[in-house]
Structure formats: structure tokens, C-alpha cells
Image (cartoon, rainbow, N blue to C red; front, side, top):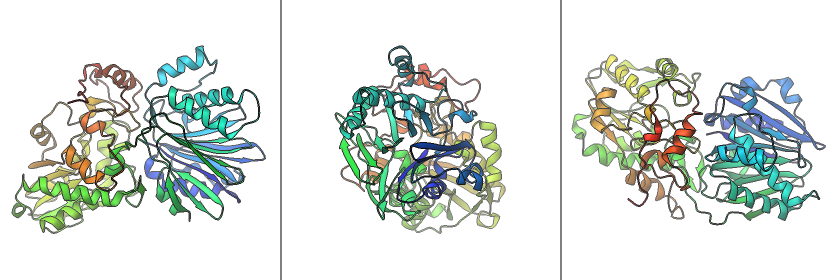
Length: 499
């Protein structure tokens, strides 16, 4: 999961890109980068850290030009501690191309061999984004054949890219002297949308990044579609995939995206309200509402679901935890020890909301269980009589290979465990999960054009159809922030999609 943005404007774009990255900061906190173009020359600054720390006044002054790209990075592949892997990435031929990428290529290993042995291109990092850039550059070089860049040739190159690479990818590339190219994988797993304002065009991961900088959301980029914005601001678009179908990542709606975003014509906020409504039915079947005194969300993504659940059950809704906004998301912190330590730095309980009460805590999802265990104990320490825990998402039982930081099954508290075993491990008095079908129906009802989702971390079905247990084992060798002694994931049994 990363946040990406590209701008073609009639005025300097450095501040626009900076502001958009601030609005996408929730999508990545490891590194940030911006590149701009002026008179065919690229100007780039990137480094590890949050947007506000990476860019100072002197850095912004060194980013002139009316078009550019930006990215906030959250690593899932490659070396998390190398600034060389911060994006954007650059190649000088053909034309000069810089690129930002959100997603994860599942065949990057094979592509590296192709690039070296057949395409004669050199990869200098472990990042799959650099692989993607070089595949794109090679295909553009083939279609243009050393001549002037023509838009049909550019779309033909993207078509060939789709045929070569597998996995999830939302891509924005800046081609020196020509404009900005954006495209999305044929399944639309990772989000990408477009907006305009006074003749300028922005492409970004989420609609909130457009609206927050004063742009009007125009539309989503379709799965497999390529959009090219020339330097005069004219937009050209073409479908470049052989058989595109929209299967967005359902975890975006559960947790990753900002609630004020609209993704693939679905309000993230409304999706979370619907999840709360569906979860309420599951709670009733497990814990009678008269045994619950208060519903308390675990900040922040769970608030809409918790509020809707409380409303439907006729229970008081209270804020029982105060969040320290200056501590990063525990979900994307490397290492269990760091993640566990940060929970109490991040949240503090309001004792008066817990003392002597039976509380129902609502979380958006339970991934590793480390945070949940700590929070349940915090509620008990604050005086709760009983602590029930409900998850707006189903059990996360399978690795994710499409760009979310949970590829190793041994890190997943639900992998190989029953709900009762998970409850005992977390230490709550009752544990209620959303069910997979209920989740899909709750969110899918908001857009009839969506025929399915990538819900692989919940159901083990990988929509690209190319993932095996051996692939997962290989991907885990490059796991960022993993623990010692993790199990051999080559033994992981994946469900049959036909089941």
C-alpha cells in the first residue's frame, strides 16, 4: 500500500503535490518523494520519513515545473531501510521516464531475469517498482522504434506491459517533454482516480487527495485502462487490457482508505456503516444486547461501523480511547516488539467509560492480534467488568500478495486457529467476527457494477489466478519487518476457487 499522485498544470506543481501527499500520508509513512519537470529536465527529492519531515523549504524551491509526480511509501517488498528504494524511480531511456507505483508485482522475480537476459536492462535495487519501470521503458522503446513518441504507440506499450506483469499495480509515469501516463492493473485491485481544475489534471490514489487540493473528482481510471495527459493538458484514454474486470481490494474499504474517499463509486464511509449493520446481526447471535452496557470503537477506522452497530442495537456509543496522533499506525510498523510497545503510546483509555461496565469493543479488523490483546487488557485495567470484541472484518487467515503488509501466515492470529482459540489468545470474554459473505454483500451493494472483490486475505482466493503456495513462500523471503522463526509458508494450503 502506497499513495501516489501525478499533476499536469498551468502553474508550478510542487506545492500541489506536497499537499496531496499529506492527504495520502495514511497510505505510507516510510518514505516520500516528489519529482517535477521543467524544460525536459527532472528535479527530484526523496528520502525516508513522513512528508513533513522529508520536504523543507529548500527542497521545495528545488522542484520547479508545471508537471510532476509524488509518492508516500509503505514497503512490502525490497529493503525497507534503503533510501535508494524510495520512489520515484528514474530511467534515462527512452526519452527519460520517472515512475511511482502502488501495488505489488507477483512475478517480479521472473521479470528480473527477463530484463537481464533478454531486454538487457539493469535493476539496481530489490524494488518491484524498478522492475515495473524497466518493463514499461522497454515496451515503449519497442513500440516507438527510436522514433518520436506517438500516443497510439504509448498505449500499445501499456498493452504489452499488461501481458507481461502480474499482480496489483496503479502506476503514474512522467515522460520527459511529453506528459503524464497513468494506468491500472486489469483487475483494478489498487485504486486510481482523476480530477480537474481550471485546465489542470491530477491523478491520485484516492479522491480525498483531489478534493483536498481544490480539484473536482471526475472519474476512476478503469481496470486495464491507460490515461495520457499531454503537457497542454489534453487527456487521452484507451482500454489496454485484453479482459479487464473490476475486483478492487476489499481491505481498502475495511481499513486502508480514508473514510472521506470515494473509491470505484463506493463511499468508504458508507461501506463502513454497512459493515457495522451486518456486524450487528452477528453480535446479536453471540452476545445478547442486554448484556452489553456500552459500545466503544478502537480508533479510528472502526468508528463508522461501531456507531452504526450501537444505533441498531439501541446501545450507548462512547469514545473510550484517546489516540496520540503523533505515533504511526501499528499495522505498518516493522516487528512485533515495536508494534506491541507502540500500542500504549498510541492509545490511552478513559477509565470512566470502562469502570464497572460490560463493554463491546469494535475494531475494523484483527490481523496479528497483538494490538487487540493489548487493548483488551487496557480495558480490563481501566475497570471493565467484561470485555467483548467485535471485528467489522472476517478473520484474516491468508497472506496478502498484492501490496498489504501481511504476507506471512505465521503473523496472522487467525491462521490455523478457531475463533475460540483466537478469543483465548486475545483474552476477551467473547469474540465476534464479520463473515466473508456478509462483508462482500455489505460493500458490494453500494456498486452493482462490481462483480467481485479481491478478498484474498479473508478467503484465500487470489483474483489474478497465478498464486501458488510456492509463490507465497518465495515472496515471504523478501518479507519486510518479519519475525525470526516464521513458519515455512510453502506448506500453506490455499482454498480451491471452485469450492
